[in-house]
Amino acid sequence: TKEGRERKAQLEAELKEHKAGRDEAKEAMQKATAIREKEAAQFAKESADLKTNIAAITKAVAALEKGAGSAAFLQTPAAQQVRTWAMERATLSDETRQEVLSFLGGGQRASYAPQSGEITGILKQMSDEMSQDLESAIAAENDAIKVYEELIAAKKEVATLQKQIESKMKRVGELAVQLAESTNDIEDTKEAMAADKKFKQE
Image 1 (cartoon, rainbow, N blue to C red):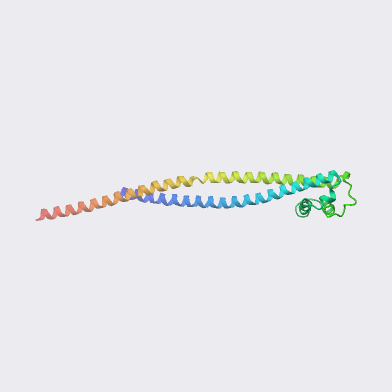
Image 2 (spheres, one colour):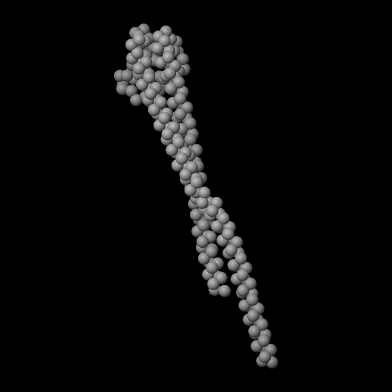
């Protein structure tokens, strides 16, 4: 029937729309997951570096505050980590940076007086800066996780769309069968009417 064909066409159009929505949602989820994985890897590296550097500076400060361990400390990997941080990432004035690098390079060993606390103060400042960077990185990571989880939750519509697709595909199939049966019935009726007409004419 005409109504059945119209309903089938409408269902097929809705089915096409649902499939497009499902595919779009799946693609968005895949992209979001790839981005989240990349962000998580960057966070893991950054937070590990910061934690390592904070630990190195803590060791440096402890050694310097003891007063006797500065020469021994300068030979440790922790001193090298502090030196690298001071050169590459610390936000220090050029003069302060040079003073720290000179000390860490052994240039001030003879003249450094631990009780003055100048280098110790600079190192503590660097440690505070790194701790703030770590806190910021953790907060940014937590925000990124929350945004990702919200996106994935919103895109769970994929399951709903899949159910709608399956339901409509079933209905389209049922309508196709009904239309085929109706068409067959019409053909059978036409044939019977033609046979009756022919019979009457004889």
